[in-house]
Every structure is written in C-alpha cells, then in structure tokens.
Amino acid sequence: MQAFALRSFLRKVPSCTNLTRCQLGFRTASTWGKPRRFESKMAAASEDPFAKLAQAAAPAPKRRASEGIQNRNKGRNKPTKRKKKEKPVVEGSFEEVLITDIHALLAAQSLSDDAPVAQGEEGESEAGPRHEQGTKIEVEVVEISSTGDGLAKEKGSNHIYVVPFTVPGDTVKARAWRYVAEHDYTHADFISVVKPSPLRDDSRIQCKYFATCSGCQFQMLDYSEQLRLKRNIVVKAYKNFSQLSPELVPEVLDTIGSPLQYNYRTKLTPHFDGDAKGKKFMKERPPIGFTPKVGRKTMDIEDCPIATDAVRKGLTDERARMEKEFSKYARGATILLRENTVRVPKPANGDLPPHPEGVPSDAIKVETPTHIDYKTCETNMNGTSTEYIDDFVFTNNAGSFFQNNNSILSPFTEYIRQHVLPPASAGAKPIRTLIDAYSGSGLFTITQSSLFPGGSIGIDISPQSIEKARTNAELNSLSQSQCKFISADAAQLFRSVESLDPDETAVILDPPRKGCDTSFLRQLLQFAPKRIVYVSCNVHTQARDVGVLVRGDAGLVEAAAKEWEELSKELKEGKKQARYSIESIRGFDFFPQTGHVEGVAVLNRVDE
Ligand SMILES: C[S@@+](CC[C@H](N)C(=O)[O-])C[C@H]1O[C@@H](n2cnc3c(N)ncnc32)[C@H](O)[C@@H]1O
Picture 1 (cartoon, helix red, strand yellow):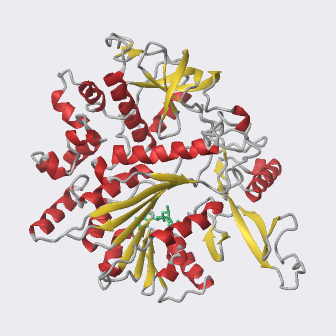
Picture 2 (spheres, helix red, strand yellow):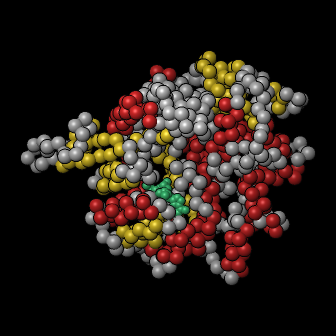
Picture 3 (cartoon, protein in one colour):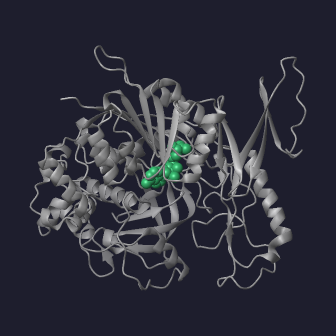
C-alpha cells in the first residue's frame, strides 16, 4: 500500500523526492517490526524477503479488477491478450485490498514457512508453478481476504489462489483462470468442496444461487463467525491502510450484528442484458437478475432471500411485467427495487384502522402494538420512498442513496447518539453544533439533532438529496435553526462555518466508498472540530483518512501539486493543522452474508 501511495505522491509532487519518510508521516520499520515495501525498492537485489515483493509490486503498471471480466469473456483456456495499457489500481478498491492481503500472506509465509520455494523458472512463479487458464486444481484455503474471498495454496506450493465462496480450512476443487503477473497470484473459480472446514455448514445456505451469483460470500458461516471475520477486516484495514504505528490504533471493538440477517435489504438493483447494439427488440423475456461470479451474462434469479419481503415481491412483479413487455425492449437495463413504507397509527380504542387509500391491497402488512406498516416496492428512480427509523421519518428519491438495511438503523443511530459527544470534562466548553458532511437526505443531521442546541448543518453534493433532507427536517418537526442543509461539495462547507467555534462543534463524516479528498481533509484539520465521528462503508479508505487525521498531515502524502503548493504556503505562514487521537473503532454489519462491513471511528482533537 505504501508503495502505491508513495509512487502516486512522488508522481504528483516531483520536487518532493528528497522528503524523508518521517516528514511523509509513514510508519518506521521498527514500529511494525518489518521493513516496508517502498524501502525494499531500493534494496531490490538484497536477500530481504520484502525485496521480492517490492519487485513484484513496484515496477509494473496495474490492471483494474474490471479488466478480469473482459478477460473471462475471451475464453478461459486461451492466453489473455492485453490490448489496453494497464490502468493503476484504484485506491481503496477491491483489487488494492486483495493485493495487500496477498502481499501480507506471502510475507508472513516467506518468514515462517519451511516449504521449499521454487526458483522462478519459465512457467513458474517464485512461489511455485502457475497453471494454464482452465486447469483444475485442488487447493487448501489458508485465510479469508478482506474482500471475502478465500486465499488458498496447493500442497507443496506457496503460490496464492484467490477462490471465492471458501473459508479457512476448506480443501476445494477450483479452476485457475487469471494469473496476475505483477503481483504473482492467480484468480480461480470455485468448483466444489473436497473437505469442508469446521467453519463451513452448507445447510446454512439459504439461496440456491449461492456460489454462482456474486452477491453473497458468507452464507455457509455461522453469524457469529461472520461478525468475527468482519472485525478482522476492520483490524487489517487499520493495519494496512492507516499508516499509523500500532500504539495509535485502539483495539477494534466487536462488530455489532444486524437484527435481521436475511430479509434485510431494502434495495436491490437486478438487471437484464439487451442486444449488443441496442437495436434488435427482444423475442423472449431476458434473464433478469444479477451478475454471476463467473462470466458476464446476467443470471436469471427469481428470488433473493437477503431482500425484504416487499423487495422480493417487487422482483416477482417486475419479472411478471417483463414477461408481458419484453418485446418493447432492445437495450439492457437496471431495475430499481426500493422498499416504501406507509405507516398508519392504530387508534387508542384498539380497533384496526382502515386500509389506507392508494396502498395496493397486496402490500406487505407489518403490525406493531402502535401502528401498521404497509410495505410496497418503488421501481421509479424519481419516485419517493419512505422509511422509518424509530419515530423518525425519512423520504428519499428512490434512486438516490439511502442506507439499505433498515433493521440496523435504530441501534446504529443510537450508537452514534451515544458517541457523538465526548464525555463531559471539567472546564471544557460543551459541544453545541453538529456538522454532518456527506449528509444525504439528513440521516445523522436529523437523528442526532436533539443533542445540539446550536443546531445541525448537513451538506451533500446531491441537490435532490438536500431537497429531501429539508423536507425530512420538516416532517420530523425540526425548524431551520435546528437543521440547516447546504447543497455543495463537502469541501465548500468550511466557507459556511467560519462563524462556528470548533471547540463547540462535532463533525460526522459519511463519505462515499472512495473516502474524503485531500482538500476536504486539509480544511477539516484547519477548522479543527473538537470531535469527529467517521462513518464509512469502506473501512480501507476510512483507515487511510483516519491516518491522515491522526498524523495531522493532510496534503502531504496524496496532495495534488496545486494543493501541495497551497499547503507549503500555509505551513510557512504558520497556519496550524489539528491532529486527532482515535477513541474507538468498530464495525456494524449492515451487509450480512457478504464480505462488507460499515466502520465507525470516533476521534478527539489532541489539544497540545
Ligand atoms: C455513503 S452516502 C451517506 C449519506 C448519508 N450520511 C446517509 O447515511 O444516508 C455518501 C453521500 O455523499 C454524497 N457525496 C458524494 N461526494 C460528495 C462530495 N464531494 N461532497 C458532498 N457530498 C458528496 C453522496 O451524494 C451521498 O449522499
């Protein structure tokens, strides 16, 4: 990871090649007990086991994961021809996370294994023979990567195979399909289990498409094991991507489970393929479903048990509609299935309220002591969907972002309420104001509002989400002085908050998967709020950004040249950037049965 970060940094800031590691804020070799890959670049010819990794990692350009899909279509048994120049691995991407885990595993085994390592003749990697595409192999799974795939080895070889739908301790049959030369590992398809791991119990699997559809990875595992694995994903994210020495990272807390482990997803987006040129109208209903793990043609999937009943019914209804309407379509499309709730309070006399007007009679009915929820499925991207979290109501553009596991949002927002304010300490100014950066339709601005007498400010780049956020504030009886929303890039936020006292301000960040950009982090460090709660569906970019906030060096490692100039000027002018300590880190399982985890990191400004 550091090798990637350093290269991109040096590329962007050519005049900074004489900066020392210390100035860059990297961990020192001694803090991790091992030399780092970027150091090994200079020691390529040495006996250092990391030098080999560096040679594999450093010079070659990299491919994006999506190129593998193109390769698959060319036929598994033919050698892959590369037409395009390889593109760099995207930061925080699936591929970068996988490569980091593979490097860590290779490094660990090169330090500890007695197994003899083959000597890199033609057709062999340094770790053992590599197979032609299509070769069937038997491998033993040694670890699960942070992408949810098994990392496996053949007997007598240290070569790593990435095999989905497997768990540590499994011996499985697999088919090699893509050798990744620059990182010396091979992607393989899962074929069958030869000897199951004690962790595996296939009777737990609830979907007949498991291990074919690419959506879920963990259905064969007990739920407590899934939570343990997800905690480990968070641990590894901070170890591999924060660039912080271990003493700065507190022990990662247990992952909080989802109240529902199936029937939880309030949004699905199945799709169907069309004519390649989009000209020939369909002669029969196309397969409607999801992308398979192998191949690119959409699988026909009639049901998805991780979705809520309303969304599952929506899938059935859409498939029935397509049965009649396929001939109108020439192009492929994505279908939106988003749960929508109409809540009807029960009268105090205990009578059942009448069926609400406009709600279809076959809506899914969920009765509680106080109300009846009627659940339907919205398929119009521009339609409005409504969700409840405790007594809060949220309306959204059905096609825009909203968290898609409603069952966990009550405990999750309660956890944020319990942690967004620091424990009261003598003499400290109480926090009065909340900034909710990347607010969407106001999830945190609204659910946390009661804690902030000075008001809450939400900012999001999507004008539609901000429009809904304003509506949601009204629907939840919050005035404009209690909840204010700005539609803009998050980095513009700091222009609007100059009047706020950072000592009295907490910030919640919930950026998209790619994390925060440098400009935002730099401005955040200059604004220096007392407390930050960083929420993310990508714990790897979260760990990277938290590392920046803890070191207080936004702009140094990944700054674009212009930002670097600005930052140097600011540093010369003596403008200060804050730094933070991490109070706690923990995962929430928003995505049961999959390898994904939502991370929450709570940070306090270090007052020196
Ligand atoms: C993971 S969602 C979180 C939304 C909200 N906190 C929630 O939980 O419902 C990320 C949000 O960031 C917004 N976003 C993406 N890039 C942004 C940017 N540069 N500035 C502000 N908002 C951005 C998206 O529109 C999206 O609503």
